[in-house]
Image (cartoon, rainbow, N blue to C red; front, side, top):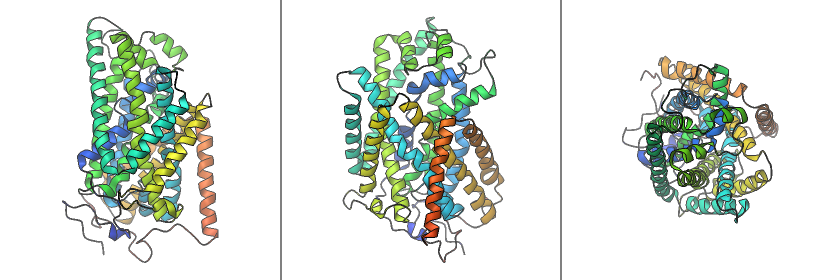
Length: 479
């Protein structure tokens, strides 16, 4: 028999899934929404604008439109699984319980490639940017400082992290508003190329392979909305708020991405040169800001990018990664010490510290490579998008196959379309990312085989001897 649905004004009871409530339930819907926006970074295109512009033939705004639509299908699938299984672990938990524990292990293993690498990438990008502004301080010192600061904030509890998130979101919104107002005024005064729709569609350069190739880069800006699901056990409201926060954050961030890249694309001082040579220095957005408002605006946008990536974004990335490690560790699919909760602050303390150490080591190593940032970016994308494929499959298996849902739109059509879009992007990803990504997946398969050979197959609480389809929803889902 299916378990009863939780009252709409209460968060889900973890005991039905075999877990104790250990994390602090203190986050509201607004906290979740802010968390997702901070993770995606409202000004994320500042740092990769030139790459997307060059890759899309100048149709950078179109790349973000398609990217938002593609990610919306994934957000809707997340929404369904977050309601069915309102717990930490994201794709690891959804695939494990929606399909089978071994699949969940591999999904968790793959998305680790995203979550473990993301903080290191963010720290590295921010440290390089700060070094360019203050050359007297080396990259490694900036990197160590960012890691230390974020670790302290995360260690002292999710409430402190939430308060910092709100402050940082407000600061990013102010910088973005300043750029947009000055940029629009500059265009009205005849600077740049004037108002046009070319950033959305340019008949001279348009082709679907070109645009989808740019989408694979633009998607990096949207990664992070899924991190909201990691906070399911710290959500104090009903389970469906997790999915609503994901969709809301994605929509808000997407609109901001489209508007700011449209304005910036019209202000690029040398669009032909950017299309021909790319943006190896990563300064294309700041060059556009300089056209609009001068050197002070270019400096402000560069500084905002460094702080947003190195502090705000990496802060929530570290929090999300530690929750993934915690979820896998309490299921004995990672070392058990990572499941330890600090009794005072009620955070996964050891997992938080491990993420800090890994981020520091990875950041320092990649800083010594000429291709460090680009390599990390493609690996992060590959890990996330591959895990999202498992998410879409889990929606169909859990809701349609197991539970007999006849909600064809949400439980079949949406995940199938989302799967197809992401598969196209993964297939067209950089060869280096594909090779390293599949090597990582292969290592995960070997680990899984060893677990079975040694009599320790992946298992999840409440699945052994219990109804594997038990969730917070009725058996026949029609709504």
